[in-house]
Amino acid sequence: MERVVAWLNEKNPGLDGPIGVDEDLIEARLIDSMDFLEFIDLLEEISGDSIDLQEVTIDDFRTLARVKERFLGSVGLAEASAG
Image (cartoon, rainbow, N blue to C red; front, side, top):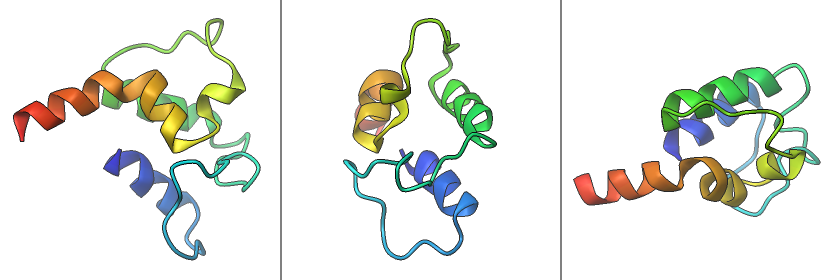
């Protein structure tokens, strides 16, 4: 998740404080339509899996908690067991 948070901070340099795991990334405009495909590319790179846009909804990208659950759950487990 560190890479995801770093990417969000890079895209939003004026951000005050940390991003909460349940903060609505879209409502807070931390991800906009111009950056959305880049965000998907990042998630695919981190997870090693393709994201089929026919099989996801906007809600799958709405919070850090949901992103982790939907796309990075196995990555988090692999990192935890490696460390």
